[in-house]
Amino acid sequence: MKAPARNRIIAMIPARYEASRFPGKLMKDLNGKPVILRTYDAAVNTGLFDEVYVVTDSDKIFDTVQNDGGQVIKSHKEHECGSDRIAEAVENMDVDIVLNVQGDEPFIDKNSLAKLLDVFEQDGAEEIDLASLKTPLMESEDITNPNNVKVITDHNDFALYFSRFPIPYPRDTTARVTYYKHIGIYAFRKSALMDFYKLPMLPLEAAEKIECIRYLEYGKKIKMVETSVKSIGIDTPEDLEKARKLFN
Image 1: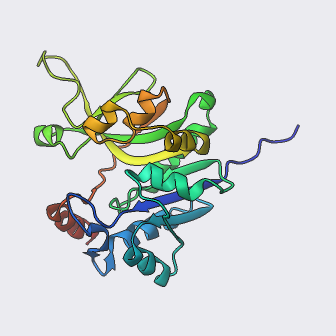
Image 2: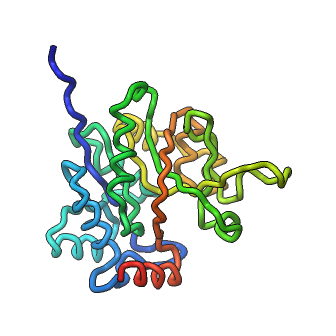
């Protein structure tokens, strides 16, 4: 009996220069290298991917990655979100699973990514359109911080909803609820990613400005994988200072 073909897996790092909250953050120095190169190197060093690419709208980021010996693709169209940017880049690629690594998440944990990719090899994997990571939030200031996207799931760890608001709302303060932060790393089936690319944004995604809500609004199944690793996303200058200390 012929063994099933191994999934071809690539990592894509969408890199937009003009981030609204912290413009140019991907080119800020993180202990001797720009943030985007730290993220790229971390993705390559996991050894989990057949290829790793940065995909960007910026000549500055393109040149920086290319001059450092990295693989980089220039977007030809304007995009509202990272998934659209990645979809344009992979449309004509021979690939099964595409892992989206946020360009401002340089502290990639190999074990977490391995767990994320493993869901596509398990029983029942055929019902999974994409998978993503979540981690518990313990401090009230983290739970209420709108920069931390929260996620709630069903009993099989499929996402029910994402929000910048604390969900669930604690009407009963005695209920034992764990709040989870969504870590913006996704593993997509290419087919689900291309569907996303062709479908228009709907009101919930537009209101929250959380792109993965589009998948839920169109009935896609998102498997959430829990990790205890505390990632630092660089959304503000203060986050960058935390990242520099952590890097040391």
